[in-house]
Length: 494
Image 1: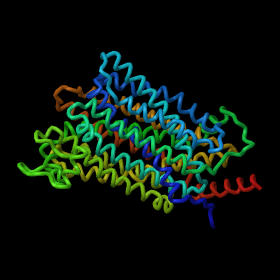
Image 2: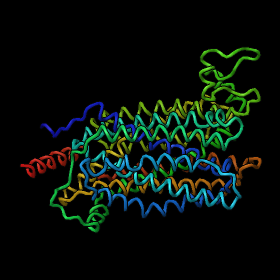
Image 3: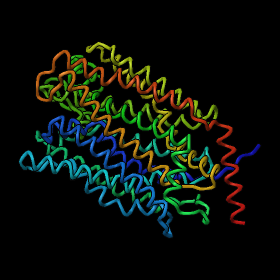
Image 4: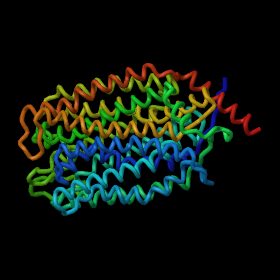
């Protein structure tokens, strides 16, 4: 049986993906570096930083659904969701820079500044990202093409992640010249400028094609009821919440893992194979001169070994993640999205737990573990966002009503709540084990870092996999819903 198809061009998919690269400059920085920045560079206490992350999520509980409701009711000649990319591009870039710029103020004033700029950044992230995510559900009604669009999106996102994870610390050191606060401000300014340009490219290059029934009753209450009684959406909400708790907790802990747990001499010996060490008395090769532009050369005193090591590992592992993202479409087309997603979660859990048991001086095995983790996790990334569009289809199929923006807004809130809770829980667990910035790290604190990077995330990945085992939209139903909705839209236009 031939199923409904609505193909998108290569250029439109690439243009759509660029805005997620933009958002991921912020997302990746927040996930991997926010705790370290606010505590070690900005000068906040761990408790204040953790509280800021948590309170920010309560703020999102209001702004995210409100933005979804607003986006669904936006009517312009460019569509419902596309215009928000341009309207938010300037504030997004400016607040990103402000949030990671450290003013020379008294401690209390700096803390207030941090809270205000962080909350404003999260607000404009919502204004930008909720409509952007909703675009995935309205650019095409073809469920397989929707997965393809998500694949392009997350290849770009992982490309941004590769840049952020690999180059942030080296760029901070290079541009700051020993002043980390200045280095962070200049590094984020570069990321923000690129983000601003990418949002405009997306706006001018994509098109919205799937619209709700024009006779649909515009009721906020019914939008909410439709989502909260939509089983696929509810399961995706809790899965997203758990996954991003894990990613935030693990991301912050991995920076500390590389800095404090990994044996620095062993790390130095391993990454020397990548040409990041200048021979004693020798000159830089052409390769090393290129690496030095981005701060990837080890200092003579080896003070930046963990930064360079973290950056290199992050870039290479993100490259493997991109391969996993690309494989998600053929895998899901063959066995279905649910099976691939649940399998990815369980495999990622095993590879995450493995990290806990690796010795500090076995850097080669730590590197292999990172590659395997990236390969296991990669296929799940585009499927999550494709499945939210499928859940919006499911609601329209069941009720005749569609609220794409609200559906995506709820899951974006789950994402940001996960980031906040993950940062808070990670900081709490580390504190419970006695970790304190600027103080010599005890053996108990090292255990806390390993638990936060390995065992707790592994357990939560299992929970996410189990939740998805109950996701009701399997491959055949997914295709049947797409076909039925396409027939309804043709009948409305006839």
